Length: 187
Image (cartoon, rainbow, N blue to C red; front, top):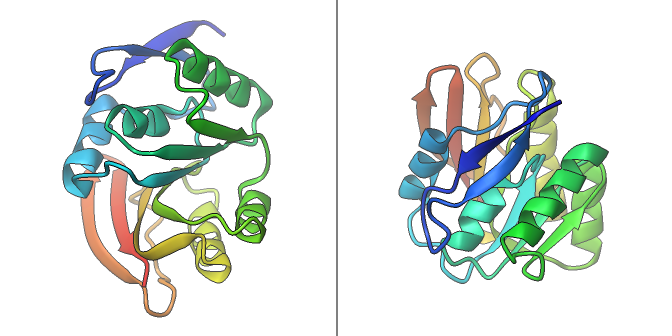
């Protein structure tokens, strides 16, 4: 595997690079899509962010650069979690971001037991692997998102979100090629 890079699109780290592993299994969120997500979400200063299936951490790094208070990243793959920690350290963000190297559903349960709540949750599972709705339902069941919090789901257009938890609201959807961005409001 060789390394390549992704640029941060906003905030005080704008233009800085994240190291990515060139890996056929990995699918990185493009700078264009990340910028579009943050344009849609708007002001996030002071938010607490949960980044599930976080990979290289591009979403969390972008959020931290744009003023969120803290971030929690969950990544099951050992090499990706190592790369994530390295990226955070290289950008002096490691004190503001907790990295959990574990399964996402287990992490959601753990965070709920610890009474952690998040204003913004980013969910970017492997495409068409069946994780989208399972993870949304776990977030709802364990009440990890704060009331009026926002869940941002990056998913394949071939894997539509069919089930929204009771009381939650699908606010927006945008299409970027094969990628869909769905915004769900917690109630």
